[in-house]
Length: 123
Image 1 (cartoon, rainbow, N blue to C red):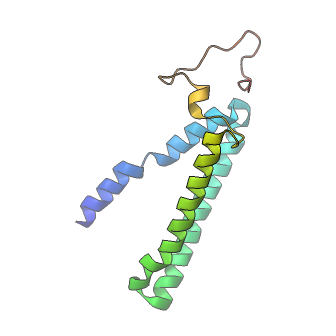
Image 2 (cartoon, rainbow, N blue to C red):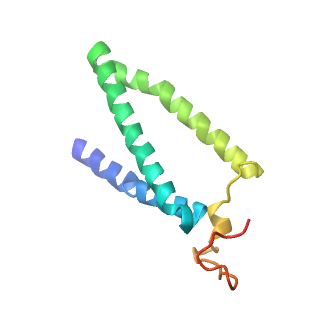
Image 3 (cartoon, helix red, strand yellow):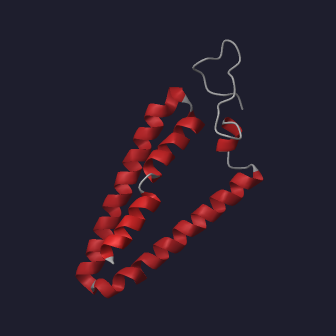
């Protein structure tokens, strides 16, 4: 059971960091890709460390039965942030561009105008 759950988890979320980095590069442009991806990696690892610390503290003080209840407010907060972010993005107030606006319908990049090679796409 545990091995099956680990396999499903790996298949479902194993490629997520690479997909997030690809989306960051598309949105920030090649000139800022190194800064954006390094910040994404730093935040990703800080989140893992903070979750490990919090889980360890809950486990030590309240036991394994308290872990789901301690995670529930965090899950609710994450879902709230994601919902608000998505609604802002749909309303056009998010400030960034959607990935579909940068690439074509099937993922191909639109041709760059002459003299703009290596620069970010215009807004």
